[in-house]
Picture 1 (tube, rainbow, N blue to C red):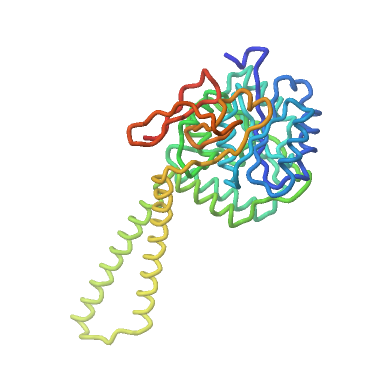
Picture 2 (picture 1 turned 30 degrees about the vertical axis):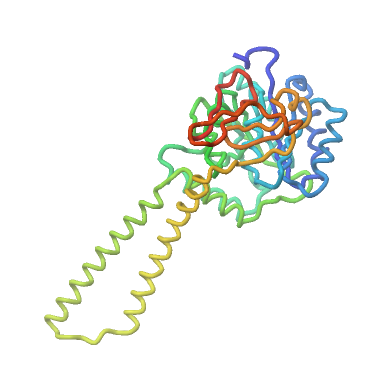
Length: 369
């Protein structure tokens, strides 16, 4: 296997969005901390539609550093889409998604690689043992999300206090490439294929510079995407709630009937009627909202829109990819002259089928039928 050869390659996947303050420092720290394995590394930045000088700084670094490559998205598609693009286009023996703010310590990658090579572990992930750099609210909400997700998801479990920072073997990448749903929850997609995995504890430091681009609204929507993508239990729960309320209503109906037969007709109270109406109305609205979350995501899936659009690829990675306009299982990319398009075949429903794979020996990826 490639991991046991001396010429193995590991690609660092670095999504950036308005991170001009941290990019140069990140590359400097990586080359310092990982100096013993630099010949095996490639640093692939994914510019997720930055509005600052992030792309320009990366291009300046590429001019004198052949290990740096750039995947530039046509607009801001989000971090999950940016990582999907990098997984589709990188051709290394393993990849390591890592944040540019250095809250994921690059020196830990040495241990990741050792475990990957010596213990034949396919996914090596970092486990945050100390999150004192995060706010109390973030620690509580994060712990609650992991607990709820693992309770609701019966088939896929994600380890607690684990982010995207991990080493992923090529065979896991090839499997994830086939999971071409539009709503991407990468932590769940990494776990879905299975394979052997192992955690490595570490202390999460403060950001080296800049500010986080996440807020609680984005984190809330991110959590909803994860739960809805990997569990249908919320839908089933409302069936149970409806059955329970129906049973209680039946008991209350019997109580009213018996009371009327024994005591005669009683004038109903306005307060009790309003309480029942408002309560049942709120239950109906919440249940409709849960249905809407699922239906909205079904609508996104049936459109079959690309998850990402890569405007250009630069660096040595560009030379290893097919030129022109290309399609992958999840998105499309332009590399070099966009007029250079490989022969397109029909997939049987009138749509184009021009799916490509970055690595020649990888299983050929096919479009969703």
